[in-house]
Length: 497
Image (cartoon, rainbow, N blue to C red):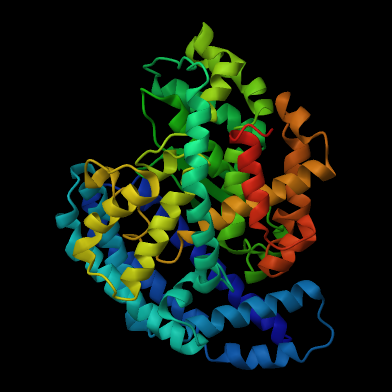
């Protein structure tokens, strides 16, 4: 076998182990009884240690050196070597005992978080979250020393390869300067319009689920390779060719679950559209989380809050819930789905206020990783930041610093990719609609194939063939341009469209 073939086989086995971990993680969040938490934590820790051991196999360095000298490899193989070297460099920075300790702490903390969130009990979660944070600092320090990065940037690099906080700081400071004033303009504009009536519940969960499944099918979700379930926090997970999504239901408001389903379906379409020939190789993985979040936000925000989508969806909503009257008309539903309102919950936020939620989390997690504030002060700092950025103060920690699973589950460095993804989504959707003018008219008829086909060709099937900026330039003609996102917000919400 050639050195490249040895590497491909080895990372194929790592992918198989990752698939098992992915299904266990999904079960942990969606199905597992709470009494199994300790046993599951041991199992997950062992699997994580085994995967880490395979990822730092000493022969990988030798195989890489020989394969990189092979002039007969094509562009996909070359890109695979680039990704393998990146992963190997990061993984060899971590000792196995740190990987095991982090895995156990995360499993326990995530289970504790669910009860703490229900009870609004930050104090009860604090010792477990402190352990996760301490281990994340150690991981960031170890990776940072190997990569020449700060601990936070080393953690960020796992989710956004090549991403740097210096660039994000400038970008988010610009948004933080733009959004409060723009939000007030939008709120004033909305206040001058007649208030649109809203559909009144209750909305039965089984009917909400049926509507969600219908929308997933319209978007092109492959039910032969996935499923829809319920979890405390909506997510997309599972394994290669087994892409599972979850949502959560509120009988008083069907829009929350529906938009959650649409968001996670955007993630799932990306996963299901990755190239089968490289599905189990690093080059076949999604290209970072800003691209991943762009796909979910493109579906949820760009496509499914458009007038075209509401034209298609309104009759289905009326049919699903037996709705009638002014609140169920297209104009009223569109007003509802483009309503701007400062709220407490990130996953329920509109396009205009959503970035403020992310900026807050980004600033807090960066300070916590740098040990610039004690974790015990998180509720106070969170509430103060919400007041500054959004003008609201959460009434309890359930609707404040306990609302997200990311930190308990070890996702430090993930949050900025949401707003990077929102900007990327605006740029990709603009490029797609310019290239395929039938995209919006087709969505109005319930036909998403022009949009999904363009995404399959330009984003999904490209996986990690290119670096992030290069991929975006190939797809849209330029690197990320925040001005596109601002222009989109002005058109949709500022009365310029």
